[in-house]
Length: 286
Image 1 (tube, rainbow, N blue to C red):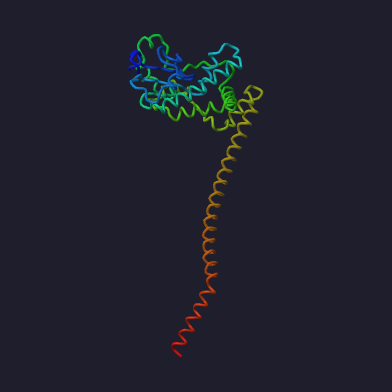
Image 2 (cartoon, helix red, strand yellow):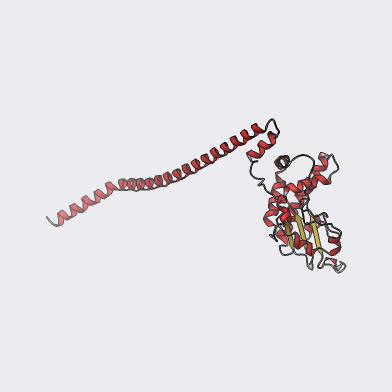
């Protein structure tokens, strides 16, 4: 640290709240931006600040991000926010790799909210700028199934966002346990896997009085298809085991065949040597 710098960096708490964390402040007062931190040297001498980078599920993150925009959100404005969100995930993972003991990268959906609340100064807690519970209100666009479909469409357009979130998940600290009221706030889906068929049915076939019977029939058919799929997977696994067994037997057969072929190639030479030895013995013992 340069002589002219303030001692405010020593033992300070630099708090960053990414969309989905439930932290109301994107950046605590007095803390440098994540961009500035990323540009700092790998081992900044004298830097003793405690750095908390908080984030949450992709679902809640998109809800918070959209709610920040003025309705109706403009495409260019949403694109800029998504670009910043993705970049912040990448910076968070980079900073955690660089300063592992100094940076706490926390998915607050998975715990750590109580410990963070103890770290915050009383005036920040008193001002209710952080809430340990997740906000349950979301955009007015539709149900959870519609939100899932929207996020899947978003991730298809921006696969880098999912990769950046997964990178942050890989380097995140495991701190505490999720609160009882955070069950719905946790990420229930693996966005790398396709949408479940029954959820797609719920989206395509709205449940009402006239269509309730048809919905039940579709759900039953969905269950049958899933059972058939499980049977096909078991059959495929059995075939794979059979193929591996056949490959082992074929390898054994080929090894025997190669040994026999080698012996067959050497057989004339061996017979010739045997005849020579018999001739030699006949000469020595007439």
